[in-house]
Image 1 (cartoon, rainbow, N blue to C red):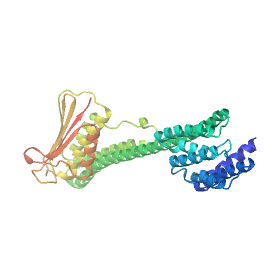
Image 2: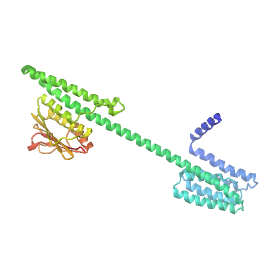
Image 3: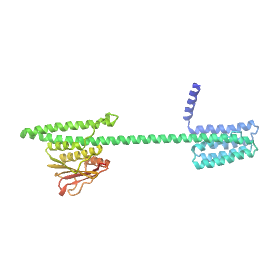
Length: 384
């Protein structure tokens, strides 16, 4: 029995590999020969029977493209053959057409075909004055053929649904991976741009400080070391997500409690930086806290690297269900016209900052500072 099943599976696999036209041609030829053979056995092989059998079976070649039309043609020819009493008890062509109709046609056409088939079967039994028992047996054949076609359609629809679901899941995974890559790219940009900017500034000023103020130089080198260690620690946290299956295993990203240290490192780099708060601080979600930290970090980085400023002020304002962040310096101002607010910013830093704020459901505004002096970044984040 196992060997027979194996042979059956091989035969089915081979049949599935054949072109559909070849399969339909074999089915049509078999149905036509079946009609001719039964007519010959019953001694009713009239001259027109082979022609009628061909008309009855030949449309099956197009059953996949035009199931409704093929069912109508085969149904009419089957009724003619049955009325002439040259058709066997099994209307093969019509059963194949009924199966195809149930598998491929829309509901309305299926309903019309079912009604027409019932009428055709009745005529085929009544006109030749056949036994009424045959009506029930032939009806059962058509019900089985229709049920098999319905099962084939359901299987095809299920396969299509599963393929669509698999495609959707793949797209969602690709989208999630893209977002994660963008998140990691933003994190690494913020970390490296800020830390390396401070290191470069202090390293360039180091030789001068060594000659004129050794104590100051020692502080600068300590700041370089601390900044580099902090950058390495943050990079390990960001890249840790690439090595672990569970993102919860990695250490938390820096938040609002890390802002004083961030501002102090800018002070150590030689830029006067202050941090002030208005209102009563309250707990905020971790992602909002990280977004606030990165906004301040990127703003300070731009100030250190590009603004040629002597002072920068960071202000946190707690109002209602919003946290307002303002970073303003007294440097050379935005890269756009002096009196035109830069609503879109420039460079990857401001773009990444705007994406972070949008992801947190907040707003971001960048432009000249008070009186057109310096550059100011203002962000408003919801923390409920």
